[in-house]
Amino acid sequence: MSQPPLFTATTRDIRVSVRAFFLEDQSNPEQSHFVWAYRVTIENLGQRTVQLLRRSWQITDAQGRMQQVHGPGVVGEQPVLEPGENFEYTSGTPLSTPSGFMRGTYHMVETASGEAFDIAIPAFSLDSPHQTGALH
Image (cartoon, rainbow, N blue to C red; front, side):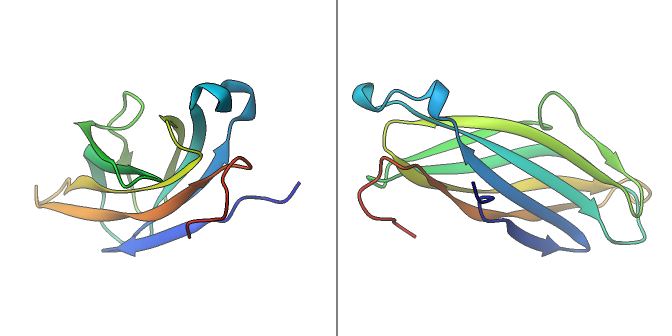
């Protein structure tokens, strides 16, 4: 089985990479319930220490319905990344359609100066074997 594609975006020396995986065993296509896990790696390629404070997601299904999700940190953490460090986590999302996509923003702060800034989470597709023709 081939690896799903890797989506990457770099903002202000912070690289965010995402790979999504369809979870067949948690999905029920007959009930319009499709579930994905996504693995995120956040890498500090710069010279300054930063902290991830909040996240904002836009999750769009195959019918164009968009859901906004906002919250503190990721998976219950607000990781601090020293220069050269990375943080990885896995999360997931359900949809009522067999495909869709997600994109978002991490709200960061530079720990020394207190300067707040946003970094892009690249748009990535949520594809399942149950879709009729790929959207992306």
